[in-house]
Image (cartoon, rainbow, N blue to C red; front, side, top):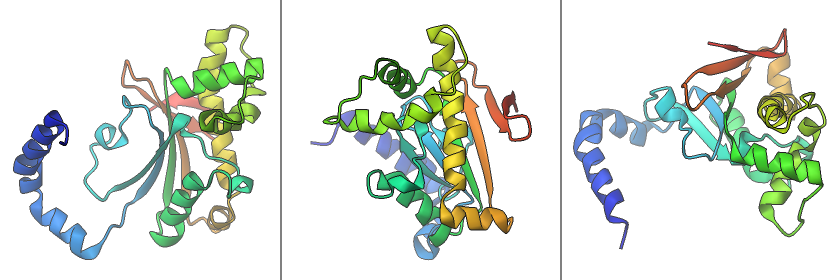
Length: 207
């Protein structure tokens, strides 16, 4: 049987939020979706873009993976899930804005850091193969202590993913034609503060 607590939460949603926005849902069902933003976020259960931005259904296309990584386009066959989600959002739904959203205390980043540090990658592990994508970002770390290095990697990884994103052919073309915007962001889970990447200074600043 389906989990009881989820059934209760579903019924509460159905009798409250759904009823209040029934016409909106009916319109979405009839007309389809036309989200304004793609957000590449972490699978971490503490980070929910829809909640953070108080978005309406149909407003955000959210793709979540471990450590909010955007692979290089060369990995189209090996890590096609994220690449396909981005391509769908841009070429099919014609979304004009892409946001990569990292966060504090990211377990994926922490584990990836240790794997890079110890060269402890396991080809038989899908998690290990995925976190192997952090190697280019790991090589850019300047911090001396391990804690600071992990914190730094959270943001360097976002920058690296943005550079990867710019090399996707269907995005590169739209950037050249000024038809699309890309953003980097990072949220502190404890304080709720969001920082965004300034491309001119290559540094993150609070909103």
